[in-house]
Image 1 (cartoon, rainbow, N blue to C red):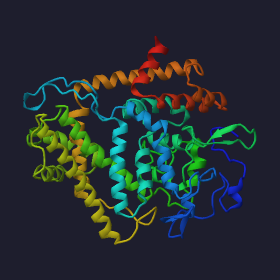
Image 2: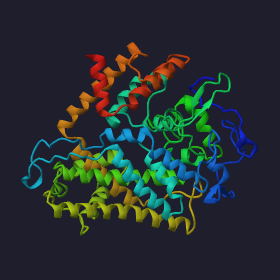
Image 3: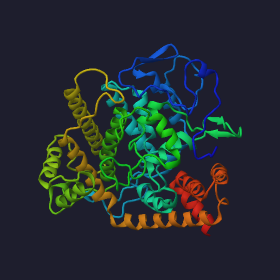
Image 4: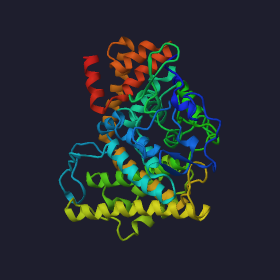
Length: 472
């Protein structure tokens, strides 16, 4: 069996106990009101037995722990999650180029937010919002922790270059890479190949509901239900078997309720905290949001990237609603008092966005427990526009800084040259894990995918280090 397809382990004792063999999907559909499943001596309210199945059956090491607690622990202890500490979120650990607001000295944050701290913040938001709506909190937290695992070095900037490098093997997408890590690349669980007997990885071997909850875009490349030309997708061609297994019975193109909570928590966490980081680093003067043409520029970014179709007037109303709150930070001088006020503002914003979603969802679906495909998360349009405006503020004043474009241009060169060097000399230059994938690949597409996997696994620093070694 090709290592590009998830393996089917030999039947074991779990099969005789009524658990399907790996690779042989259960005949039960994704939960739509089926009886709740029992995991050891404990139940998981709102979830059916099919939701708790794993691709490769395995016994529970400690009875009494739920399947979703195990899933969360596996992601939390994964090397892929740790590596996010070395991938920048928005503001790098470097001094600002010019004095910040009120003439204060250039800021220097020795411990800026990274993809890891963002994931932890997203997980905290998602856990509480999901629990308030009846989701299993461990399941939602796991999805939030896992949502950025596939980000390559240099974030979306690196993602665009990797997509060009990976074009011959189906492209690159951070969300599809996250699934690949969870279901294949992260070393945790191996099973023997049914033909050769060689050990094959099934990644973290998460439950069906966990893999589904971590899937933001449940379709392959070109399969977006409303935009076939969209660059967003959630599964590579050679990962389709496990995708079809955990999506069995799911409505086509529809995300689970837990995935929707994860997605909104991601939006909330990064919109709020990116603005916080921009203020703290001195890149954003709050007074700018009261003046023209700065406001028009923010609204243009919002309409183009974060709220397509939104009119400038409604975006202006959204920003003014936030500016009118008593807790909004109208100034920031870096003092302890200012830091406390800013932290309170971020807390107020998170509460505002989450309570609005909770209230609107309850108004639409009533009381009860919302899990899997039993409901849709409802976020009022006015709240989505407020969130979009915050994203645009961070984009305009932090991401679009002139000095950052020079940094991003250099990052693109690093990834492009790294790809060229590895393609020219592979398997030399590959880590043992990815060299094994390269050697086992049956064609050039598989070998290129192994090289892309290697590059995607790097942190910002290790990407520069490997680039320096390979290019001299």
